Amino acid sequence: MSLDPVLKSIYPPMTKPEARSTLYRLIEAGQLAHKALLVPLLDRGLEAGDDAVIFVLHAELGASEQVLADQLGLDLDALQPRLNRLIERDVVARQAIGPELAPGLALTERGARIREVLAANWEQLEEALFADLDQKKRKGLARALKRFVELLRLP
Image 1 (cartoon, rainbow, N blue to C red):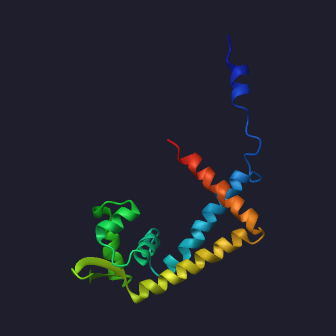
Image 2: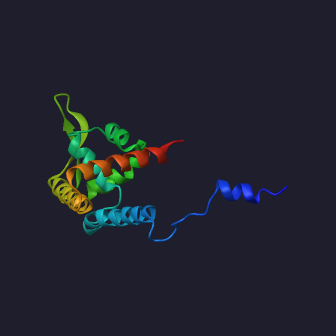
Image 3: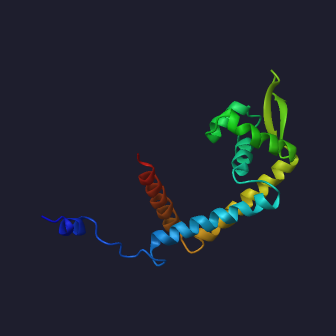
């Protein structure tokens, strides 16, 4: 007994595997948006992932290295080379924080300016994404993308 007819009914062929499919367009848009977000980093001699450090340090003023590592989901050994490079490039500085003068990290003036550029770039891309959508459709798209990401993250 052959399983061919059963398999065909369980696994129908993809109807739109080419560039017309919405999923393909979503993947393409994601890849192009990622490249566009990297441009201001690369222009300043920084690397992918450096933006995450910059945004966390902006939100967590005076964060310890451990707090930063936890926020980024990295261990301290993986974070150290990145931190050292950002300190050498005058983006991040080590400094004493709080009344106890605990060791911490902060953005330098240059780091703060870079963060502003990165945030503006992010906002421009997001505005381009939502340009043709009213507020209701924007919320609907955001909910649909959130649900899709959650589905993909299931074990």
